[in-house]
Amino acid sequence: MKLFSNTLFLQIKKYLINRLGGSLPLASWKSALTSAKALSLQKPILWLLVLLATPSFPQDTLPLFVPQKPAKPLSFCTAQKEYLALAETFPDWEEITHLRGVVVKMPYATYDNFSGHNLYCGIGRAFLHKDAAQKLKRAIGILKKQAPNYKFIIFDAARSNHAQSILKAAVRGTPYTHFVSNPVPAASDSAIKIGSLHAYGMAIDIGLLNENGDLADMGLPYDSFAFYAGKKGEQTALEQGLLNAEQIKNRELLRSVMGAAGWSNLSTEWWHFNAAPGDSIRTKYDLPRLPPQ
Ligand SMILES: [Zn+2]
Image 1 (cartoon, rainbow, N blue to C red):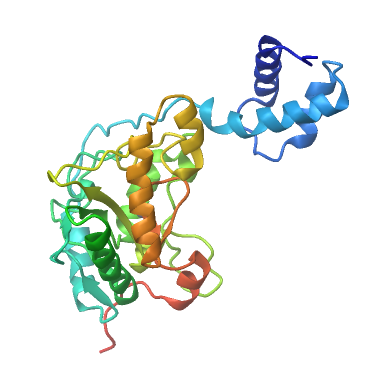
Image 2 (image 1 turned 180 degrees about the horizontal axis):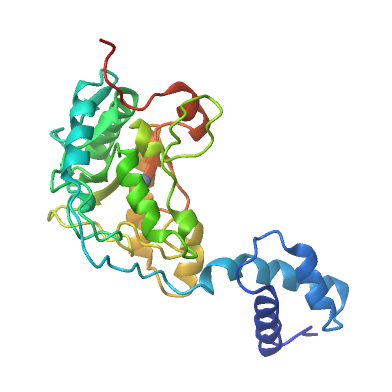
């Protein structure tokens, strides 16, 4: 016997989503159960509905974030030039702009990014910590074997706290504020638990160029705020026809090559990879600083 029809299920799911406001954290089991009880349903069915309804509401009920373009777009030349001078002289870091097998094309060095500002003053130079640069070189070697006609495209690597603050400001007050990391707090100590791993030169934003030199289709552009921008939402997006198998295959290729080289992918962004776990980066690595006089 069919326990409940699809229409009834959809109505109940909608009811649960509405009751929970679409913005509560995932762990709202109790509240969800109370909502379902109000519908006088049998207990096993209640739990099933709660389980089915809960994972979907926080992401796909939010409208897609469309950033507000600033009234006066700025180019942050002084800040970026100072940062690059620091990166150049920091002995732990290495420039990766001219590595064979990568193309550096940084949206933050243009006005065409979600902040609407030219954060890098048009200068497309990329740096990483030596440990991360080593892993990138390993990834380049693996990609050459797995997909000889492909290249990496680097969207961003080490990023200054200054640039990070501007990115954070662009989403502050929106439901997407948590999508963008904070800058690393000024007081540098081992208790620091927040701050972008890009600041340590231990994270990279990277994609693939295919045999024609075009961006491999990942279904969404770099810095998309959609719920299926990373692996987390891929299966749902595939079922809903928002992503196709080819796009997921391209993402898998990037993940497998980077993963084999020791990088771990952020589950919400296809392009973002960390060279080590966040906690160990924050305790073992430094931000770039001037050498002691
Ligand atoms: Zn990133």
